[in-house]
Length: 250
Ligand SMILES: [Zn+2]
Image (cartoon, rainbow, N blue to C red; front, side, top):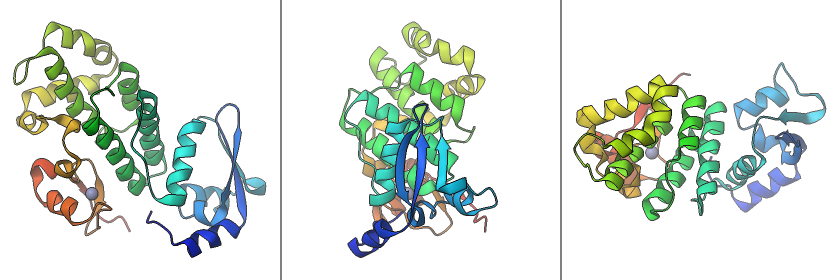
């Protein structure tokens, strides 16, 4: 999603509205139909074969705060970095929602907002509940998982002083609930520790955003990154700016 001109935004605002009811409380959001239908997930609902009756859709499993952040991105093209642990948790949920909508532009913007937060502030951390949510809701090759694992490996090694060595008992106790519940977490975490990838996570997801480049982005072939040339330059370099590139599906 690129930023709109004021004229484009005004046109969107005068268009027909649809209503989306979000969360268990079914909080209502009135949104430009033309704008929301630029996202296939919603155009299928409002314009496709499963047309939602009377322009109303319900997303009872989504969080209204997360959906609010999604709407801000929809109208502005921007996702702001977090100011609290709760904000970080919401950004993680926003990434999962973007993945549900198959919207890689929003995924890339959101992972940048998360990475920028972790780069700037020491305080936010990978919590057990956050990691559980990520492993419950994302696919095996998710770049959110990759960011989480790299950041966690770095954070634990820094907290318990074992850089370049095996985790201490305290670090193992921290990850234990995740290891027993998610075999894929076990594989990702210990896989990161034992492979050559470890040298890439000197600062994990807390590295400078410019150094991270497109490391956690999804791009189609030849697609220009929203971060522009520096990020693209990093993308060409597998270390540290590696990115997943999918073949064009069209
Ligand atoms: Zn990129």
